[in-house]
Length: 120
Image (cartoon, helix red, strand yellow):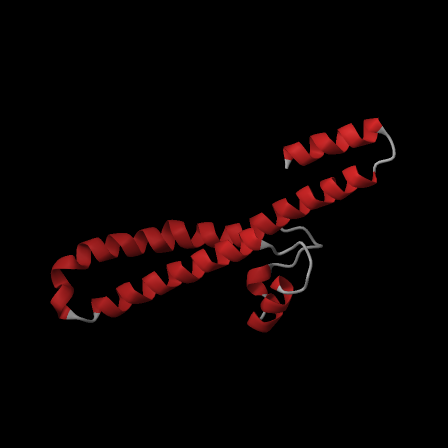
């Protein structure tokens, strides 16, 4: 359920995603970048656990590692995936309300836009 004016950033090729981050626009912004870095860290931790499974030295730690992996896969990864997009959409609403407030011609419109900004 993504807004049509905002691309699904995780579906973009890497070069295009980087161009979006460096394009000088308000979206995607720092919150989406932070969520993306969280997602990368989550995937790297998954890799460490998967590689560690191959080493019998850590057999006694497998229950803990499997537990951590399940949290990464079932909770953390979906959270960060969603947060990349959600932050951009939320900040877009905030930014548009802020611009509308700046451009408002009268106090009533300004107050209405202030309420919109506060709701974001």
